[in-house]
Length: 368
Image (cartoon, rainbow, N blue to C red):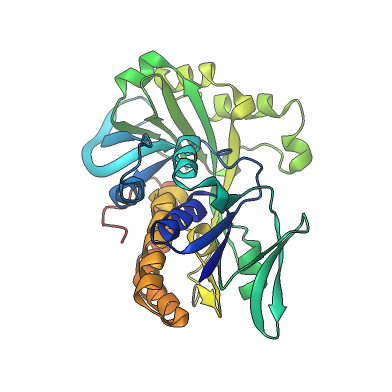
């Protein structure tokens, strides 16, 4: 059996490693020339960290991640509203995790500079993936791990209806040793009392923090589009937006904004879509954001991608019939995915209405 994975991000690398460790021939195909690029940082639940430990077992790969054991919720004056212990969470820099995963997959199984174009059929059966560079990869099973804008999903299931998340998120990483050291192990979030505006801080090391500003764009925004993002003035617009919206927030926030290089910051326009009726069609199956997207308030996206890889591999090993394997994979994963989509929307609504009942913005139950 030959498995062709389209997309060499976290989901694609994880399923590639699992399949290789189980002696299944696999080719992971990534559009970037080098995989470990893009993004900043994210939180990962214990279930995702357990997957990482499992696939790294027996290697000398350094496992990244910083423990997060406390959630601190503050008002814009810096007064603590809630301080609560949380279990089973870590913060990862995306590049660190991608470098680790890339090191765990033998290089002959990872093929870069391959932008997916279309599938090649013999009769009604898909037999190969074609890439824009003219190369083909033949296989028996094809796994779409090519993210939220999945071209594989588009070709197999058609267009999904994305639901706008109503909230934007401006993200950055900043070096600030004094503040990072004082916040070790803490996820700190400042929430405006009367409107959809918050600022979060999570240390990624003893010297560095990832920060984010979640905001209702009705409060203020910057121009959208590629031309706007590529203009020389764009970083100044991002900084001005943050300084304007967060002017009443405490000194920690001002210190981060002052130290931040806004040329490396970006805005994430949140969105999701309803649970798909299935994750496969014939010999093509989806994992990670290609299969499901929930709003970021749950912090479950990366863990879900890694759990998809684990469960799909287990199902392929358990069932000789691939359709039975794919159906069991969907049965196991779909319930949690649906609940995370629902929770993300609930947390978004609570965010836009700060007077609503407060919920810690992290999934509390096991992802599996």
